[in-house]
Length: 328
Ligand code: PMV
Image (cartoon, rainbow, N blue to C red; front, side):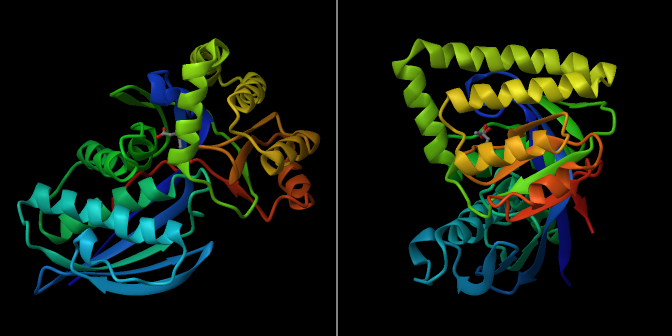
């Protein structure tokens, strides 16, 4: 017998980075999912295979202890995704089901680019916990899965994680996260377009960079507070269904993130291409550096404009995903 669970990726409408310092953020789940299939084994080992859009697939087998990881020649982000997040997700599932010696064959499939600001690791952690607990006959609700997936990200990212990605992936739709207060939001239809530059970033490094800037410069603290104010204004625009105002606020949010040093040339170029293509607003999504931007489309010209931009390797529409985690 095997069990499959899937969970969506996300874009940040507003608030990444500032959310790490207790400001609110509004991530939105998108129709790009990670799917994790687990099959209980007779022993306590893990066999992990992963296939991702942005990297070649691979298969490895190990005992589930980080010390015994085999030396395999695959890119670091994928190793982290496969070992770090799966290791920690399986540990959470073993704990929840009170089955410390459970072993699994794990297969990950994802159409969410890794480390690009679309919440791939959160989706893998959420889907992994859901699949492994269901396989062990232990039913967790979406909020419990979100909390355990947050612990996974917190552990793997050495304490540099907010609840935003994992809560959003577990619940679906648009959510608001401020510290440990997390809730879902009612929103109008949000016609997102994503531009991807084909690169990945190290979230921990970018978060550390902002922390350093905050230690050294008052303006960085003010900028983080300004992002918080903007998110609160954004909530009103969401309630009113005012897409033009949402777009304006996304543009301001991008500027503030750039002031914190987390944009980059390819992200800026894609943001401007989206705006020139008629988007109501555009900003980087996630930690920044490289990866993805999200635009709010108006006349459906944004995707074409992005596709014609040399820095953009892929542009796609990303409908708001109403479903969060689900056991398939
Ligand atoms: O790039 P991502 O998907 O890892 O998003 C990071 C978002 C941050 O706010 C920078 C960090 C966090 O944990 O909230």
